[in-house]
Amino acid sequence: MKRTLVVALCTLSLVAAACGASGTDEAEENGENGTETTAAPNGDGEAMFGDLELPCGEGDASVAEGEGPSTDTLLLGVANDRTADIRPGLNKELWDTSVAFADWCNEQGGIQGLEIELVDLDGALLNVEAAMTEACDGVFAMVGGAYAQDQFIFSGNPGSDFHRCGLIAIPAFAVSVEFSGANGKVEPIPNPADRVATQWIVDLVEQFPDEAESMVVVRGESPSFDSVEAQFRAAAEAAGVELAPTVSYPIIGADDWGPFADLVIDGGAEVAYWIGEPTNAAQMNQQLVQKNWGGIMLHQTNAYDEVLFDSGPAAVEGAVVRTGFHPFEERDEWPALDQYYQVMERAPDAKIAALGLQSMSSWLLFAVAADECATLNDGVIDRTCVLEQAAAVEEWTAGGLHIPTDPGSGEAPECGMLLVVRDGEFERLTPELGGDQDDGAGFHCPEDSVVDTDTSGLADGNVDPDRPI
Image (cartoon, rainbow, N blue to C red; front, side, top):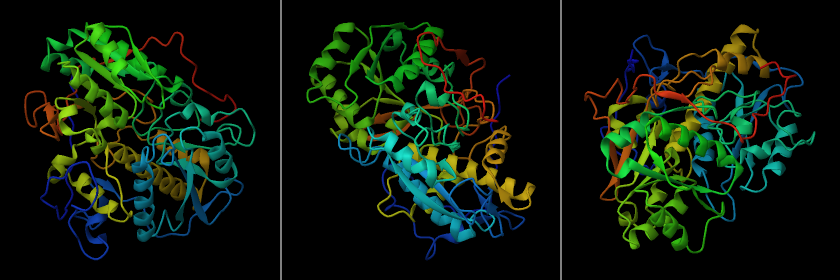
């Protein structure tokens, strides 16, 4: 039986404007600091984020002794790669969202009175171990961020290894098999290596039956992408799609994308599934267009980003993006999305893109879990309790930002939607809002849409048997 999604609407002063995935300069002003709308009351006077009761507020909580460098401040590390020389600004939206959330939550009183202080764990793509060295003695938890090569958080060294330092994480996302299958963390939107939803492939085949007869994976040469390719292969096989030989490119990108475009064209596929970051994707798309390839580039959620247009709108016309988030262009339809924009006004020169919404979801889940721990444990917040309370959340939408997930189960979400680029803008492709395939809140949730992934040949999840969760 299909799941019906219900998003409860709270009382908000909505800004009736549709905004693209860019900056916050188009956001409406809502008072001097936006607090009247970014912590909107519901009918009972409780402060809300979308349909989620705000987990930030006054109190006298403390951090458990020995779990982090401070008992009277929540020192929280944000994993990111935004100063990578080979790709400046990579996933900058993770840091920007974290800055905005911390400021917003602290203004409400912190988490039961505990102020959030961010620690910048910039791994610059290739220096993750150095960032983890800072994390080991410098943070209570890692929240709201992610590394493109997150397998490197497990260095094996006592001063820089995620497990050996006893760290916990509620990350924006996990990429590698090692981290997605690890313990010591809870993902708000689980991405298990051994399970994947087929909704996006099935819907693509329905929209483009001729082009989708044959597909090809185009991926960066990084072990962190092995599970992403395996997931795609499982979904494509379940949908009866033929796959051409994989095309791999250097993780740092290429000076000339022409040879890689030739490999796609020579393979005969009419849909290319891109695994990597969107700036490289734009350059690859441009080469395919110049070589008169008439196929469709299919992207992950991270491509829902204005940088996809860096090589010009014509280079990515018709590109399709899978997502589980409400589109920025429908901001006026979804209260939580409107509030996200308002919160983001607090971060200077903030970048707004889909991965920022994933960061916001992880921050809200952490705050809910930490707030509950303080309530249950006489005001004391500890790492094990935070993980237990985050895992106890069985249906999670971050107040209405995205599809329902079950963080504690680690199960792949079954719902989603497809966006398409038309005339230089993102727009909804399917399901039609309110249409036959809209199973509620604008997402499609086909029955039996989650299948097993062939994980043979992949690394194992990095599970520490001595950790309680």
